[in-house]
Image (cartoon, rainbow, N blue to C red; front, side, top):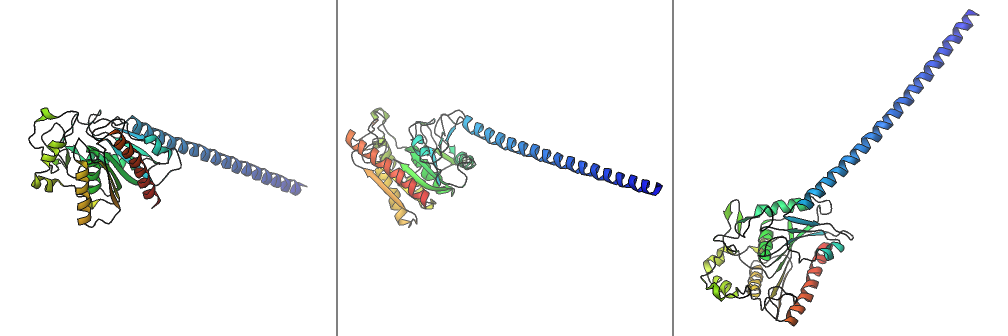
Amino acid sequence: MKLISDVGIKLLDSKMHFIDTTKTRIAMTNSKKENLKKNFRLLITTLLLIAFTTSCIEQKDPDTKYYPPKGESKNVAIMMLGGSEGGLPNYFDTNGFTEKGYPCIVIGYFKTENTPDRLELIPLEYFEDAITKFKSQPDVGNKKIVVWGNSKGGELALLLASRYKQIEGVIASVPSSVVFQGIGASSSSWSFKGEPIPFVPYAPYDHSKVVNLQYREMYELSMKQTVAVEKAAIKVENINGPILLLTGREDTMWPSSQMGEMIIKRLEEKKFPHWYRHFAYDDAGHTLNDSYMMGGNKDGNKKARIDSEQRIIDFINRLSQQ
């Protein structure tokens, strides 16, 4: 009887040990599950916090303004540059392009909070950093970067694209074919590694003759400085993608159509391998817009506005599909 009792006790102890072990294993499994849940929640919270913080930083940057895509995301992101007015221009149709799925960024490079007060020796490295930040946006990533500039911004767009391979397309509206002297300055508009980029200085001119920003004659005289023009010519043949040029033949700010033809001639001579076109509009001025005209007439500027808007959309859509 004692043997049976001992055996029974041992069996009971064995069962109790099995039950205790099982409970421990269950408890450990539940603990692991809870830890995994906590770690997962922590990871999600951290990622959301990083995304939120990045978004806030980008939106609070007083020198740029980012517009995320609203529609189905396309394969192009647009970097927009204003002209000699400075600040952050509001005339780009960012809403129209974001609704089509194209993220946009408007970049101020003078007369904004952290940029110079005048257009002189603006470092190209500033724009290289802006491109990097633009590409870091989740909606941009590895999309093709198109730079779109108007007037002085057109000069800048061509210059940047000629130096940075990250840019894969250019829209230059009423641009210059050369780097000009800075606005209200004595040196170049742009610099690189602390040195002024070769530029065409303004020819002596009686500024009392200027009415309504009609500087065309001064720029035409300046372009007769052949040695300076040759040195300051933008090396558009180095651009890593297609180029769309839009100009008004009656531009009263500067001779954009003639400079557009100089760009085309250089591309042809250098056997540029990408697509390029120049649309020069009759009876249209510097703005290519009938609501505010700088040369040309109402009808010519209206036609230029309607046609150029469609050319830009077609250019971006085509590049996105390639």
